[in-house]
Length: 321
Image (cartoon, rainbow, N blue to C red; front, side):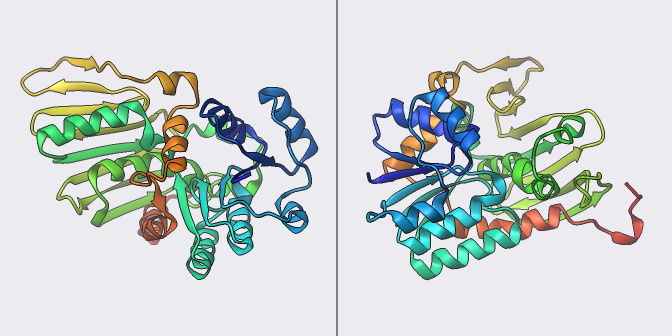
């Protein structure tokens, strides 16, 4: 086997469905008995039990490629195990590690071993995003944009997730929206940010706002309040259109000179059949088309931005959570 799928949880199930549809041969290695059984019942593919470290010790053939879809707290560890074992190419689920320091550690190992690690932000591959890019290119680029990454705290707090994952929820979940916004509008070159509040499970912050300018010359702003109503969304303006992602899987458009907002028809069959974005993301990875897949060094360059957005400032003016 040239390809190994690491993990047997819900995200691994989504990857497995796509790999089967693409006719790709692969092995699956999981950790827990319960998740492996659920996986096998869901997709009919056997899971090798015992975890990655044990399997890598016993195998006499290291695959050249791996898709890492383990739980959030084990992403970096799994990627480093593969890199040190000699796996040449890895598609690593976003954000690439359990924390900022974990991602940095994985990037160091990748540099030492020469491993090509790509970060899987599947929303870059939505049909809505592909269509928006066509319009943006026709209109001459993005002039300004805004985005919201409000999380539904009343639901997140009830998730069956380790405390360390919930404490990094900004990185694990909100970065989906932030990555997409900056993917379309450009990476910030300068910006100011304000963060306040916090929750029992995410003490670093819960209310966010900021603004700045990107490498493409686009002005941007953002807002999120995890303790108030809201939802994810991205809006971009060009010389002729306002492009609205709310929800992100859909694209709505407002044309210059009109107040009407219309839904854009999309060629989104794969986003309807599979977890949105995962089919095209997996296909791109297998075909070696990495234009939309961050190398881990690219993700490394984003960490100071994530860190700045999620840091309380100014510290002496914050309200208590």
